[in-house]
Image (cartoon, rainbow, N blue to C red; front, top):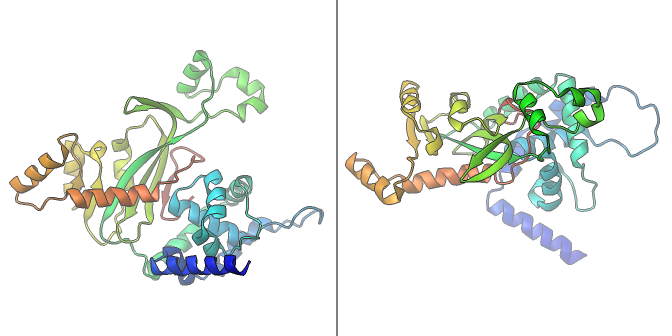
Length: 319
C-alpha cells in the first residue's frame, strides 16, 4: 500500500515537472465564488434522506470545466476521471472516492441550463482566466472533428421527414421511442468513409491550448461554413492556422480584411511543394510550424465525445 502511495506521489511530481496546466488553473481560481450559482440548483429540500448524498456542486462544475477544455463527452469524461491522475488531482478526488457517472454529469449540466446559470457561470470563469494569466496568446488554431452518434436504423421515409425538419408522426405518438431518436445528427463522407453524427469545431490559442471558441453542427456541414464564428478577436497575436478545408479565395480575403496572417494548408502537393512555394515567396518554410499547430488541436480533441445539441456556440470553458 505504501509503495502504491509513493508511486502516485512520484507520478504527480513528474506531472508537475512536465508543467501540468491544471495545477496552475486550480490554484489561480477561487472556486468557491461559483457556489452561489451552482448551489442554487439544489435549493429545493430533499423529500427524503434515503439514497446517496449528492455530489458537491463545485466538484460537478469543475468536471464541466474539464469537459469543455478537453472536449470530452459525458461517457468519456467519466472514464478519464477514473483513468487520469491529473484529472483526479484537479477535482480533489482520491483513488477510493466515488466518481460521478455520465448520467450524473449530464443531469447537472441540464439543471444549470434549466436554471439559466450557464452564461453567468462561464462569464465569471472567462474573466478569471484572463485576470490570472490565461489570456489567449501566440495566435489561434481552428479545426473540426467528426463525432459519431448512434446509427438510428430509420426507414427511408423517416429519414426524408427528418431532413425536412419534421418529426415522423409515428414517433410523436410514441414518446418513449422519440426520446431515443437523434433527429439532429446527419450523414457525411470523409476519405471514402461514411460517418453519422456531428462535428465539433474549435479554436484554441497556441500558448495555453485552451478552447477559446467552439461550435457544434451536424456532420454534413462543411468546415468552412462555420469559419467566421470561430475567430477569436481577443488573441494577442494576429496569426491563424487551419487545414485546407478552410482555404478558399473568400476566406483568404476575409482573413486579410480582419488583419489576420493566414497559415492555411493547401490541398495536395506535399511538403516539398509547400517548401518551394515558401522559398518562391521569400518566406521561411512553415511546414513544421503548421504540423505543430495541428498537433495542438489534435491534443485538444483527442478524446472527443458526443455533443448534446447541434449548432450550439461556446466560448472558452463553455458547455
